[in-house]
Image (cartoon, rainbow, N blue to C red; front, side):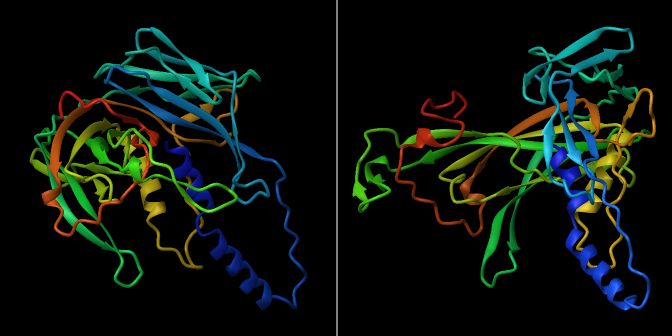
Length: 360
């Protein structure tokens, strides 16, 4: 999930830096030409994933990405046939099996424990070994309430706005300790479609009405619907009731036929993990001009066992998690988007089911 954020930092502002290079080159045209030596195929290992106290299948991905500034920049290769081993402070080992190319999964219903210390080891099929520094799972407080607030955001196009709900988590921050937070959210919504109005559009010939018998009522389950980095710390709120922005739920013309079931997850992080993702967040929020500094160093908590100076990207973190849910009525939307009219079988939508959830 986080690798694309890391790779984005290495590619952001590239055009601006190229423009700056040509400006400088033009100003120095009377000087001997600059010889630029481009690395040909220098690939960096990128490891991403996290494991929490929630019993489930946890996934770690391993890829190789070309180094920023090389001619192969942006080319990503999955790393296959690796050994991925999580070891706790007592020497108990959990192996992550390769579930798909470059993705390694824990056993079902696996979880870590608050207060325990863990180390991740990765052995590539070349024999190269990589380790994380030991990391201890910190606790996280319960979510006391979820607060949705309507927001209308300009898009840069006149009279066109993105609308939706800012989602806030309210909780009691534990006193006299440093706490670091991360949020993710998903949900379920009811989708009404109109398969009876389906129109076939063959590659040759005119569109033809082709009504379908089923189905016009589905429930759609969404995973993490806000991929932005949502983090916070308690430097200014230690021991107080805190209300932090945990995500944004866009009104996309589908989610609010009637109501939306929001599931919010609140995670703990270590100070080191928080600092890593804050750096990523800060880099992604740079407006960008030709005088910006180059992308920052985003090296995480991995190192090569026999070559500590080798560059490895990504961060493997561990956290406690608390979850809460809330039904949000479409009446909360001050200016709702027009509902999209879908003339097709709703079962064709991703993660859809015609079975009404028991909680609906």
